Image (cartoon, rainbow, N blue to C red):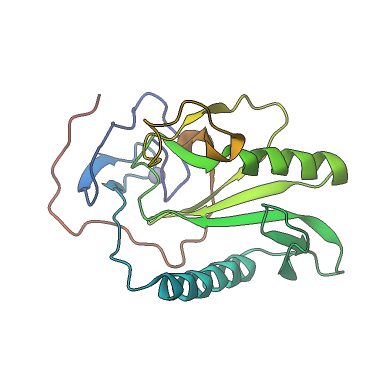
Length: 213
Ligand SMILES: [Zn+2]
């Protein structure tokens, strides 16, 4: 488990394999801070239209970016990367020096809902290239339902790759390219950030323990 409140990690408390969408259940009390940790799995919202989804998505992206800047000292602004990079943003400090690259994603589940968080393999590869070329960090920032966390793309970390079982073509594909390959990052290896703007604590239902594998 990884605590969304105090950032404590306990590898002995295994994150359960929860399947299904819209699951909302109590997981465990944090052994360090004592707060209730909940599991909420993702859900799919009915799409009004592609355009609507895009506009809403962009607005949300801006909101997340502004929230991150507001809570992070030494960052002056963030702008979209100019090339066709798969990493979205360049980050500048108060003296307007480029200090790194940033990708912001939102997951509509809590941090302990799944053992791994998934990214396209090409994103991690592009991140590694950028890091190597510029000697600047590439950060993937993830807004979960109950916390903000990040992963710094690493040259040495052994990323587990495979097909995402939820990918629609999963069963049909015999051969696939890198854009369809998924990288799995264990959530217990993420760094939880201290600020909790836009986060939700769970607790909508009564506390019922679930079976931990
Ligand atoms: Zn805690």
